[in-house]
Length: 340
Image 1 (spheres, one colour):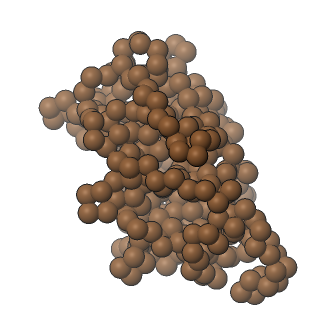
Image 2: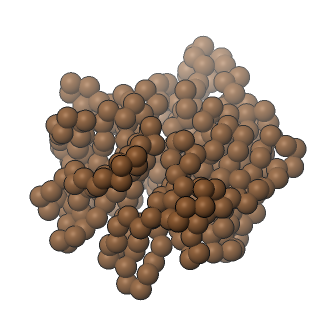
């Protein structure tokens, strides 16, 4: 893996696809940096951009610890939430060379290529939409029919529905709400600890985890009807659900050591992939998954018994799945693929 350390201006140029020629042995290849994740490198926090095809790695040093990454739907902007000594902000880098620092906001979620929905870190999670098409971004408040603090919001692709968590006593509650509708938020599930959840690409289904008997299982709720279905059972600790871009497959992790990747299709069939067997060592932890836009690969962070820090791996899904490591440890955010 070739690694480069670049200033922000050159990084923008790279993302535009303008860097060509003999670049550390790439010959005449044009790098396309389609995958990014946050990492700890020594005493620094960085973003690592990957050209998966050519094995190019571009590093961008950050001013704080990254906690969330989000590409705009057209791939022209990247929002990065940072935390440094209690200061919270979200940087938005655009391919036209502009950038914006939005103070005291987090959880960036794109409503459109130029509209960014964020959660205010100061006012119990109030929501606002920033219009990034303006030289100075303006914010408009968004009505969420919920009057208590909440966290971990996740916006559906249609920009209408929001899933989020709130705490009531010892319980963690999962809610869904329709933005700017005035309709009350719906309590979907209660658990004794945190939950994972993911919207389907068509925004019609929310999959979430629940541990009614001590082991996490997957459930889904159909948005038009409100019907809830159990997708798994068997005390396997099924977590980290993530839909393929076409919505045909649901990837999730199973097992107490999170060593099994499972792919659930729409007919209920399940394919199991033993990650420990592919790595050649015991997997002791798996972080969030990220599908490539074409659905051929999954990026996932794995911790193995000899290397407790998280490495980023790429899993190619074919008749014989293959797995290759693309980092040297220290991954601290979920992978984010740039839309094609």
